[in-house]
Image (cartoon, rainbow, N blue to C red):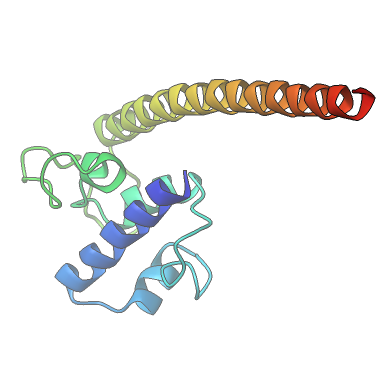
Length: 142
């Protein structure tokens, strides 16, 4: 999983370079710690709504799964209300909710798969350890 986090953070650094602003500015933009983009660990999905809000041109499919282009075409960007102090349009909010729900469902699937793999590996390691103890005991008895 840390490799996936490393890839996501690498793509975020690529995005900041493309947009021409510093990693520090990006961290401030999404209310993250100064070391957020410098490290390859510690990506929290709670940052996704902030990233989506502050970087509406960033393609989340590209960010999370390396699919598609980094920058969304204008017809795929959510329809944001641009008046100062105004809220997002209903259409924009629904779009964002749908995207986040899809990504969360994908994360849940990945989490379940990872849990199954870890359980299988632990069981395998336990069986191997058990066999080793039995074999060692048999040698000592002989």
